[in-house]
Length: 622
View 1: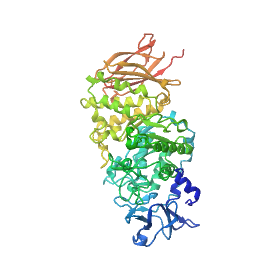
View 2: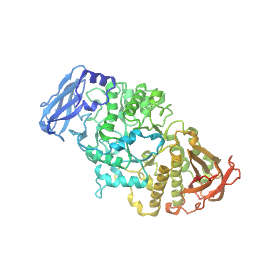
View 3: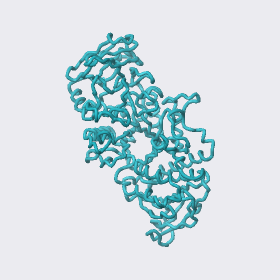
View 4: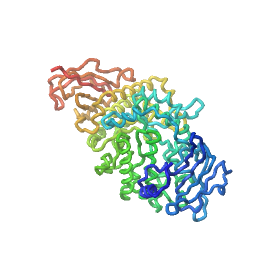
């Protein structure tokens, strides 16, 4: 536990304290043999009149343990209570200047009671023995931008449940989740928010315990174990995080000491009517220190590999609307966040869920950019889903929806997301967005995922999408795993696994994500047949990709190819094991000297209906 000295207080007030969790919260005091001697409670509440702590230890009597104001200027309260141990339940009682009594959870608590209870709990974060030292050393030495990143986005509670409907705990996921991720070819998992939150239906996006891993799925050391085991298998862990706004539940951060301590003071900028939340004011140094310390906390204590920031537009702009002007303090917070993360480890991922045109999002902060590693490519996602939802007979009139993303594909460093937001609230599941009869739906679905995995950008797929779940995602109940007894869904799962492993194994599909020369159209304009053809090239590897977006098959489709050599099919979405009609190119295709599509070499290829075809160049000895 760090002391409250003038230097730390200066950093805290300036928004430059990155380990506020070492100062505030409930900290166990131990003896020489590691035994618990008591607990120090420390809280920041400058406008409070009286602060006390209550719990079973004092029969919830706010008169028993009144905290001392140890710093009049800054408003920090503290008390040491001898004899308290780990798991002690507590909450703060704050008497405000206007005479109100507030019952608050600890903003810096390391653990919390299970909802609907709102107490904080004393928890000892020390004592877990990590086994990922070599993994972390490899991470520091790696080059994440030029490595594959295939993210499985998941909600812990509704991924897979016990037969009685109970949640699996973090540690119980280890034998279930890790083999599945490896089988499916995902080398990263992104957990929807795990910080404590009161309402299941908020999915964690309206939290109350930012340093407190939700007790729904176990205790903090259970999550440490899960992350440790994921690291053993070289699987990254990304946490979804909402730093811009807070829920208004009375026990949370909102109106903490009777004033809007962390939020905007003025009602217009504070009240987020869209979500029913309150926007945080990042021009306040104390708010900024609180938030920056969260990132450091999860890197230090949980060894996470990255963060996905939700609703970044709400940080760039007041109320998320550019017409209200740029929130310069919010942008500065994001830059500072990037600085501290990159100082800790330049390969910890910082990703923005951002649908705006705010400039230089993935430009390094030290070069004047915002400092994110990746930006979600919402334009690609919206255009692609809009295109694929159309009957193939009309697709030629909307061909630009598929080609436009390549105009800006290298303007930022992108993640291509097919996320949870696209399979809820009446938007339909991925498979159910697809037009046509049942066979065509699955063929279109395979073509869509093939388009994602061969397009420049890192990949993200929400759980259930890998086996074509028909129902929209529900936070109540688990995924429809029973569908895997049916061939269509089992074949879809096989296809996503093959697609993922192809992506991981071929550098042409990932190493050039920041290099426009890694992607070249062969024919972007065959709108009448709705066929896209392009190639990906990095160093000595060349992959040619064709996507037929109509139910027609073409038995002699000629395309130009960039180099003389033999082209070998390495993946075809129409193979029988993927649920297709088994129309594929079984023979190698040597190029000939016939001009096509601006190339001096060309090949003839068979294109199955609604299919992805990927060819690899094998150069001739000459």
